[in-house]
Each structure stands twice: as structure tokens, then as C-alpha cells.
Amino acid sequence: MKLDLILRVATKLLCPFILLFALYVQFHGDYGPGGGFQAGVIAAAMVILYAITYGLEPAKRAVPPAIAQAMIPLGVLIFAGTGVATMLLGDNFLAYNALDHHSPVHGQHLGILLVELGVLVTVAGTMVAVFYAFAGRGR
Amino acid sequence: MNSQLPALQIVLPLLGAVLCAVLRKGNLAWGVALVTSLAMPVISGLMLQDVLASGPISYAMGGWAPPFGIEYRVDAASGFLLLLISLIGAVIMPYARLSIAAEIAEQDVPWFYTMYLLCLAGLLGIAITGDAFNAFVFLEISSLSTYAMIAMGKDRRALLASYQYLIMGTIGATFFVAGVGLLYSMTGSLNFVDVADRLAEVGTSRPILAALGLITVGMSLKLALFPLHVWLPNAYAFAPSVATAFLAATATKVAVYLMLRFMFSIFGVSTTLANLPIGEIFVTLALAAMFGASIVAIFQENVKRMLAYSSVAQIGYITLGIGIANQAGLTGGIVHLFNHAIMKAALFMVLGAVVYRIGSVKIDALAGIGRRMPITMGAFVIAGLSIIGTPGTAGFISKWYLAVGAFEKGWWWLVFLLVTSSLLSVIYIGRVIEVTWFRPLSKEGEKASETPLSMLIPTLILVAATIYFGIDTSLTAGIASKAADALLAGLR
Image (tube, rainbow over all chains, first blue to last red; front, side):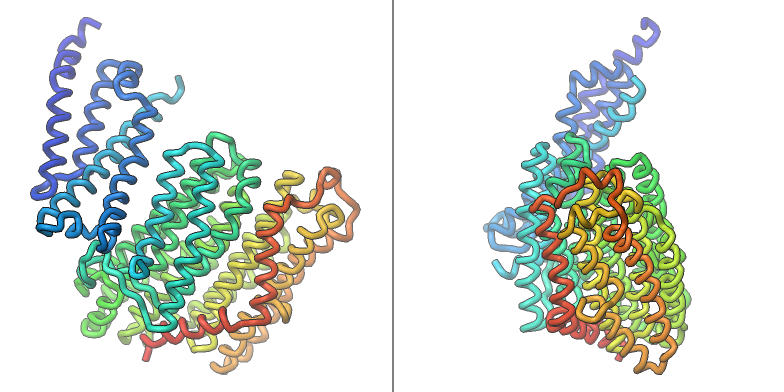
């Protein structure tokens, strides 16, 4: 236990920055490299790192498996909901121009951001759920 | 709102699937699946009406105009297939509740409906999309959900069958996407119509031939063309009854449709097809399926597995239509795609009812059961007669068109083989009829009684449809003939 002090402290220090980086990749995604998938994987990697260093149970207390599982359909719902919203605003499915009736460019920005948010939620949830499923086997 | 129908056709089942996963309650999930499934034929019916009245519908996904954006395109061929898939889904869902509750563990039931709706969205998506890569994505959505549905079967062997299908299906999908990649590198486009236009300019070259080969083999794996069918019998035999009925009626048919699209609307446009013995290859493999699979079917002890082999044989008839490749032959192939879906779904639903009552589909367990479940097994007899191709049933119509197509080509020997292979189906269907009606009641059969109404009525609707479409062919053969015209138009 004493030997992994460096690992424990380093993990604790790194976790918030990993999450911050995930959010940076997410919000940077609509005009640069990055996006929801990468952001989701980075956010999930934070949880996995925490679980590897501190054990599965503390990780499950921090991010309960039920929440991870609920995130999977929730992200798809955000994605598809954006599409339905554009349809309700009178345009085609996922035609973001309709999201802002002053400027189509703003509409595109908002649309991409929302869709990528959906991707982030689903990908992060799936990664964590898959990790829990494998790590919890044989216990 | 009418202009949004193509998007709604896909978005509704997708949202339904998500809703099922969020709700996590068996009966609520079934309710969502039922409402969605019943809405589907309304949408596809309205679209088909539009298409027949005023030509193909084009829908620009996300407002990006084709060929750059993803185009959803409904013409006679895809509209017909959309109607078929959504009708089968709508008939099966009321049937599903009792059957699924009996065959699947309670905590897995909402996941089953999630997978079913995802599969529905994927299959409808393949039919509606006008974009080659989008077709691949939908192919994967439907396949992945199918693997999960098969693995939910009660028998432990379902897991192995699902794994086998996973491997074979993934190989098929990889071949397909590699072929699409080659086409893209040669033409610079993924839109079906655009690729066909550009292919005419590019002409025939080795990468194009390789793309044709890869796509043909990939799709043949998915549609279970004879030597590539090994995944199908186990997958159908061990999947939950509802999944088997749904998949047997739709999954392979969608792969046939995609193959038709590529063969006729894309490769057919250039001179690629004319110089290759594709027709001969398809006829040979189709004949091998019709005879080989039918003979194997005769010796099966598990009736569900027997019907699965019969499916491989019936897919032979459909591909025979592709091989004949004239108007009557192709019409026969497309009509058989529709008719076979209806009658095979009816047969598998009868078996689902048998599983619900006696828990087995071994042929010995079915002995004498006709006296305990007369209406259900009567339905089996009628749908079975349609598989054989008796006049007055839907199966006769498609075989008639195939025979006419063969005659027009001067292949009279093919007509002879068509009749001979039908005799083989007399043996395997006849065997079940003999056992269920004329043998003394089996030990398992003693607890049997007539099927509950919620399962019986959907089965009877499909059986009534096999008779109806055997007499009034204006809907099936009429639209199929238009679809064949639309597909063959590429060849002229």
C-alpha cells in the first residue's frame, strides 16, 4: 500500500485535468480536431485510471454503474432529439440551419455542439460500462 | 409533414429503441415497440403511394443536397421493400408479448425490444438510403442488434450460433465496405445515382471488377447464398421465436435488395456486367441451394432448423430471378422476396406458438399435436402449401413468374428443375403435416391446447395474406414488375 503512494497522488492530481482536457476537446470539436467521440473516450479513461489505482469499488462509488448504463441511451436521445428539434422547426432532420433563425452559421455551431455532446455522453457511458462489466467478472 | 416521412421512417424506431432502453420495464418496452411498429406501415404505405403516383422521393439528410450529403431515396423497389419490412414488423409485435415473456429472462425483455427496434431501424435504413456508406452503417446497426437478439435464445447453443453469425456477418460486411471503398476511389462518390453516372464514364477496369467481386461476395454472405449459408440454420434454430420469424422474413431480403441495387442500378449501367458470366454463376448457385438445402431439410429432426434450411432453398429461388435477369424473371425474384417473407414468417410464428405450448420443436414432440391445436397447425398446412407452390397460394405466383422468365430465355430445363425442387419441399413440409395430424399424440403434446388469441390472430393474418396474394396479385406482382422495370432501366 505504501509503495503506490506516488501513483495514488499522481492519479488524484491528474483526474481533474483529464476531465478538463476532455471538455476542451469537446468544445473545440466544432472548429478544430477533436469532438464528442475523443472527448468521451478521454473522460472514460479518467474513470478507468481511477479504478485501476484505487480499485473497482471506490470507482463505482464515484461513478455508479447505473449512471454509466443510463448514459448510453441518453446520449443517443440528445443526438436524435437535436434532429427532431430541427424537424419541428420546419427543416429536414439534423439540418442545423433551423436552430438559429438569425444566422445559419450560429445554427450550425449549436447543432454540431449538441450532437457532439450526445456522442460524448454515449461514448463515455459505454466505455465505463464495458470496463465495469469486464473488471467485475469472476468476483 | 409529408415531406419528412423518409426521415421519420428511420427516426421513429431509433427513438423507440432508446426509449425502451431508458424505460427498462418489459411491458412498457413492448408498448413502445408496438406503437412504433404499427406506425411504420402507415409511413411506408404513404410513401409508396407517392412514389407510384409521382416518381421517386428524394430527401436530403441534414439539409445537405445530394450527391454531397446523404440522400434518402424511395423508388418502386425500395418502397416495396420498406412496406414489406414494416408490415412484417407490425404483424409480429402484437404476437411478441407472450412469446418473448415465455422465452426470455425477465430482466432481458426490455433489451430485446431495444434490439428489435434497432434492427428494424437498420433494415429500413438499408432499404431507404441512397448512399453506399450509409447503407454499410445501417447494415452494421441491423447486424449487431441481430447478433444480440439471437444470443438471447433460451438454448445455450444460441450463444455459439450468434458468435458464428457474428464472424461470418463481419466478414461479409468487411467485403462490402472494401468494395464500396474501391468504388469510391474510382468514382469519387458514394451516392448510388452519382456513382452509376460516373461509372459509365470511368468504364471497366480492374478495381471496378474487384469492387463488384467484393460487394457480391459480401452480400452473398449476408443473404446466405448457398455455399455461404452455414451461419443461417443455427442462428434461426436457436434464436427466440419472435426474432427468428422477424429475421427470416426481413434480414436476408434486405441483403438481396442491396445486391440488386448494386448489380442493376450501379454496375449494370456500365458495360461491366454484360461481359461477365454473372447470370450463369447465380443460376448455378441458386440451383445448388434449391436442391442441396432442400435435401438437407428433409433430414432435420428440429423443425425450426428444417425451416431454416428451407429458407436457404427459398433464397435460391430469389437469386434465380437475379440470374435469369429478364423482366419476368426479375419480377419473379422480387415477388418471391415478398411472398416468401410472408409465408416463412407465418411458419416460424406457428412454431413459436408450439414452443409456447409444449416447449419443444423436435419432430417427435410434435406428433399428433394437430388434434390439440387444430387452428394453429391448420395455419402451418396452408403456409406450407404456399412454400411448396400450390396454385391458389402466394408461392405459386412467384414460381410462375420465374418459370415464365426461364421460358422467355429459352431455358426450358430450368422450368423442369424448378418443379423438381418443389417436389423436395413437398417431402419436408409433408413430413411435418403427416406427423402432426396422423400420428398418435406424443407425451409432450398432452399439455398442448389452442394458441392464445394474441398469438393466433397475427399468424392467421399472415396465412390469410398468403392466400390473398395468391389470388389478387395486383399489389405484389404489380409493384414488383414496376420495381423490376426500375432496376432493369439501368441495363438499357
